[in-house]
Length: 116
Image 1 (tube, rainbow, N blue to C red):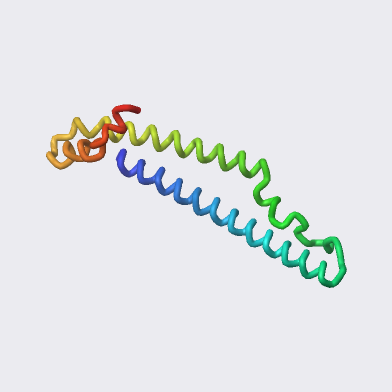
Image 2 (cartoon, rainbow, N blue to C red; image 1 turned 60 degrees about the vertical axis):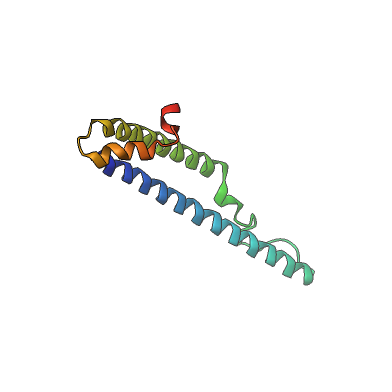
């Protein structure tokens, strides 16, 4: 059960990373399109943007509110992961199966988790 919950948190992080990547890619694409429109209009001696265009070039997608929301979500995922991982690592020494006892040794070979 603990391992399943740990994997659910990992999948939440994957979904978070996918969403962040999609938004960043869309913002970059919009910025490139806006730059191309500016260059094209400069060649035609036209200036400004037309109504309905994204004059900011996708910068609105990465607003301060969006970044704050992403930071909050990432902090929540990080806290859940740390809690679930600690719980999982604490349960390993109590297991009777030989492979599970060695799993703790393999996971903590560098003593990283003991230092935390």
